[in-house]
Length: 88
Image 1 (tube, rainbow, N blue to C red):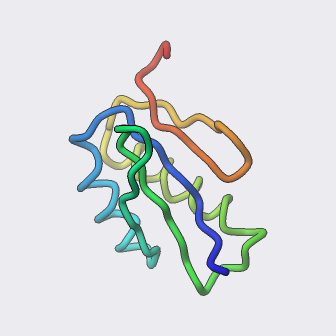
Image 2: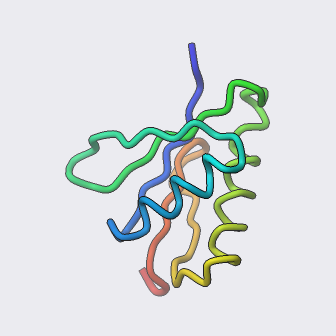
């Protein structure tokens, strides 16, 4: 079974740029329905499951740094992250 890391975005506008960035880093990114939230599942068949969370975290924070997007990465659960505005 394919293992995915879930990323919830606070802002719809960030979905396309983040998906493009992650895809450029070799990840497969799918938008998923999750109670009306903007949510992505991120996988990489070339990365071992136990390393995937760290790889996605590193890519996600690199995108935040490179883009200057005003969001803060947060660990929701071991395989689930959220990008939220500061102070949330």
